[in-house]
Each structure stands twice: as structure tokens, then as C-alpha cells.
Length: 507
Image (tube, rainbow, N blue to C red; front, side, top):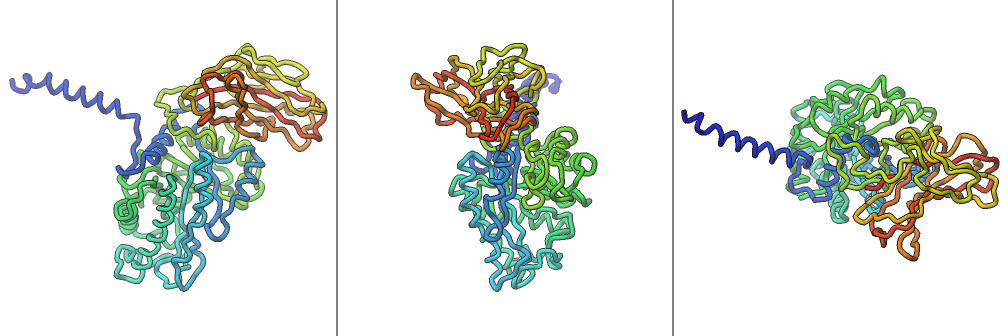
């Protein structure tokens, strides 16, 4: 009788709890409850990317080893080759292959200045460390397994004391980034299931204890609240989850994967996804440097690894632009590059757009009143090229004209107040002589003075490209008079060709 009497109240209580859970279900929180709001927002945004139908995997690129090889030269090469800056840029604080009388000097965070600049420009940053071995007085020995791994936890041992000094030096670098408001995708002890680093193939319990000690030292003792913790074994070895320290100490799980045929050969994805955390490819590259087709990676992500929230390509001979089809990788409709990161654009499960994007123009069966500037024909709504739906916008152009600027645009009143990002997809035809290439930029004109804002020139080919324009800080967004795309041809271009546009969205 008592059970029956209280049943309605229990049901109401459980219903209320269900409503509360549903209301909060959209937020993916950091394991550090004291993380900065930006850090929390970054993880939550990344975690929701798989809910999108486009713009759902962030691109990344490695800049080198701080104090040794780090620079932005290859980053700029990648930009030149693809028209895009990757969404994530990173460096390594360690030179574990070297030795020094004071091995803490082998840990260097001079790369922070470059990371700060990148974050200020709208990118995300990541840091990992190839630590010198703390088991040796002069460091080095990166590739020699540490025999006394448990000593990391005991600061009274020589190994433990050096390890604590390494952590202190690392924390100083991470604190410098936190002081600048920079969130860090922090990836310690990477490829721990392999046998090529001193921390690799260790006793699983000892490894977990070392991870947890680092986590507590950085978050509690050092008060670092700008870290997103990433667990990243290597795909090519077993025991990928054996070293997992637990869900209270990891924000993102991932795989380091170097392979020439990722769709067929990369394993471990389902195993890592089953841990219930957002998934990333934390390092990617080919086995065969210089000839690898990077379109294989984005195609593999789309067909085999669709929950991937980001990929991080290595530099030098593994770099996308030093192989083939870098543009296909960074300009795919799935890829999110710098300038397309809007942490407030959250897509819940069942969403249909790229983030909270609203489609302004899709050119389905109509030009939707768009016009062309310096074109020889069109524009028309056509099916021969489109990035979304059944139709795109096309106009013919003369590459040999004295004026090498061509435009597609809509002069009409638009209210973009409260919006953060304007985007469009573009391409050129595969005929005509483009000489040294074609570029395109997305632009708006605002207010009675027709103030011009654009997202910068991006290289465009018949493979297509994504254009973006950040609306943050732009004046008179409630009175946008024109939205358009300006194409620029090379002085040595000749013949005739066509330009295309599609899927103009705002979020």
C-alpha cells in the first residue's frame, strides 16, 4: 500500500530528473570542472561537430619542434597550395632525441608566440612533447624504454626529480598560453602502446598512475584551466585502450595513424569511439612520402570514420602540400578551416546544417536574382556543378580579358545582425588556361556608404573551395546591401572558362 501511495510522486520525480537531463544533454563538459569558459566552449563545440552534415571535421597541421624546427614557413606553403589555413596549428615542446647537461633546456616553448598569433586569428592550437628521458642525467634516450617508469611518481629519486622539473617547465609554457587566453589541445604520452618512445609499452597500471599524476599536478597544483586532455595511442599496435587512465582524466580520444590506405588499413576507430569521448585523428600522414593522395584521408573519414572531430597532419615529407591533393583535403565540404570556427555554433543530434547555419542561397532551379560582373554569359542555375542539392550558379568568363576580375553577387537588403560567419562554396570549370591560377573571395557591402568587407583571397580550382567571411566586428550588419564573390584571374590566363558558386550560408 505504501509503495502504491508513493508511486505517483516517484514518477513525477523521475520525470523531472529526465527533463533536467534532457535540458543539459547538449553540453559536453571538460573533465576539469574549473576549466575556463573558452576551454569548455571549445570542447563542447568539437564534440557536437559529428551532428552536422557539413563542416564537421577540423583540419590541423604541425609546425615543428619549438626551439629547433618550429616555424610558419610550411604553414604558409600549405595556405598557398590550398587557399586555406588549417583550423588547428601545433608545436612540440620537446627535443627528446638530444642531450644536455641540464636536460630541462631540451624543453622549449618559444613556439608559444606563433600559437598565440594563430589563436588570435581564429585558430585552435595543440601542443605535445617528445620528452627527453628522465631516467638519464643528460636526457636524450627518446627511443629507449625507461626501465624504472614507476619512479616518475617519486620525486625523491633522480628520475622522479627530473620528471618533476620537466613538468614544471612544461607547465610554465602552458601557463604562458593560459595568460594569453589560449586553450590548448594537450596530448601527452602519445603512442604509448608502441615500443619506440621511453614511455611506450610500459606496465599499464604504472602508466595510468603517471597520467593521473600529471593531470592532478597540472590542474590542481599548477591551476592550469586551459587544457583539453587528449589520449592518443597508435593505430598499428594492440593494447590501444589498455593505457586509458579513465573518463575522469581524458576529454578526447584519438589515434595516430600513418598509412597509405587509411580506409582499408586503419583500425582501432570503433574501439576508441566506444570509450564515449569525442574522437580525433591526432596525427596523420602517409608511409610513402611525396606521392600520397591526401584525398584518401578525407574520403576515409567520411566513409569509415564519420565521428572524427579533427585531424592533425604532420609536416615535412608527410605534409599535405608536399604530397598530392592537399586542396581536396582542406577544401572538402566536411573540412573546417581557420575562419570557420564559431564556438557558439552548436548542432544538436538530428540537425541538418553545418552548425547552426541558415541557407541564404542554394540556386535550386533559379539564380535567385544573382547577377554577374565582367562575365560573358549568365549567370544560370545549372546541374553541371553544385556542392549541395541539385543545382549551382554558373557564369562564363574570358580569361584573356584585360580586366581579370569577375564577380557573382546579389544586391539586396540583408539583415545579418547577430550572425558570426558567412560561407559559400565555389569552383572553376576544368577548361581554359588559368595560367598561375584563380582566386576567389567572399565579400559584403554594408550601410549607405557600401563599406566593403571580405574574407581574403582563396585559391580555387575545379575541385572546389570553401570561402568564409567572419562577421565579428563588422559594422552595419543590419544593413548589408550586397553579398558577393569576387574571382581573380592571373595575368597570364587565356581562353574561356566558367565560374561557379553554391550553398551561401550564414551562422
